[in-house]
Length: 276
Length: 263
Image 1 (cartoon, each protein chain N blue to C red):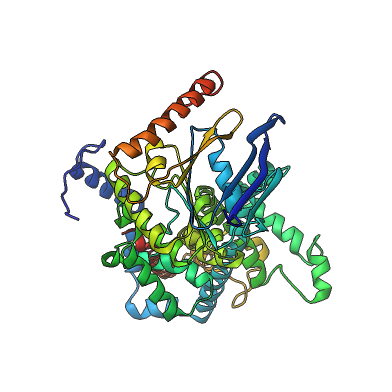
Image 2 (image 1 turned 30 degrees about the vertical axis):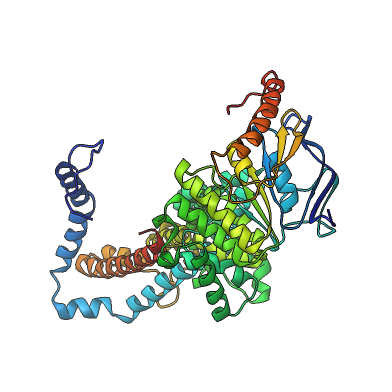
């Protein structure tokens, strides 16, 4: 495609709109982020490395990104299932269930955190029955994963749901008619149609999990090396007036998040390659 | 006529409307279709032609009466009886080859064998050059040829077509009509072809089943005793066309008071 192809667009010319886009992105996204990087510059390279690779920090990356990844994977499976049920079945109370999906989204994160901690702590409603079985949720990485799963669910459901609604029934009918069984129809017809949206939902859920703070700190227990998430570590550093250390860790998080989202976006592009 | 390929005995279909009323989509129909026959179902909207073909293809179940193919009652879809839709039903993420392969894979054919067969049928519909193209890169007519190749590759004994050329322009439509006739004469499946186009029905069908709305029913069955290929503007075809149009005019008059539709 030519770069300066002329179109009769509703919005005024390419020059103005591109200019505005760059300006807007700069003010909202790029300038704050560059300030972050700039602040980190106060550290020497050696200090930077030793700050961001300290054992406690490394452990927190593992907990944060690991838990967010697992939570996003869980959501990618069960979120799709929820979306499917909401679209394909009519049952009493469907509207209520549909509204419930958004709750983790709308709830103040602190409320979510307290609720989860109350339920899953060793004397909570659910926690007290799991404790004798040797399953501890509150104050472990499991609790962090649970909280991230909770807050990430709407992202998968809400990105996949409209795609399921749009599926042309004829494509399914054609598959059945051509002799595909249910499993083949699911894996070869339904799944390829949903895959790009599942990826998007996965990426959003993952990003939300990595960035989440409020709902996690209550249930995480925040034990260094075990259940301490990176955002909490940043806050701890800030409270100790170690601004440079905090921004250094923030920079690493930024970089990892950006790389992971880039990979997901490339994957998504690849999954839609047929439409180019 | 020997034992019919498809047989409908007083097959009827009712729906219940959202208000709970019983709506007759198709009044009892008796129809026999012989093996290798080309039958066109034609009529205005609401005449039950799509319901009728869906009953035969196994997408819907009769409310009363029976539909049998090869003497066996139709209980559901069957890869031996394939339906081709107006919207092609192609998978946008699969190439032309991938689309034709779909049913062969579902059938459990070995990869090499499946590819050979798919390639053969893609050649049959004249799309060899586009084997690796994706559906969105093809024109409507080409897409429908892929759908036909995909259906034929399974070597079904019955081919159901539900207004397959309805979305195409007049020239492409005429071209594909001839293509369909050529493929039919080569492979000789039994063809049931639904259309709302009287011209198309007369040109293609060995028999034309004219249907009428309110309630959906068979109005008249006309035998077109002409060999293929037929001359579109020929006098002999003209005679049948007149007969069909006159009959249709009656249907139209009856229906104009009851149903709302556009021809």
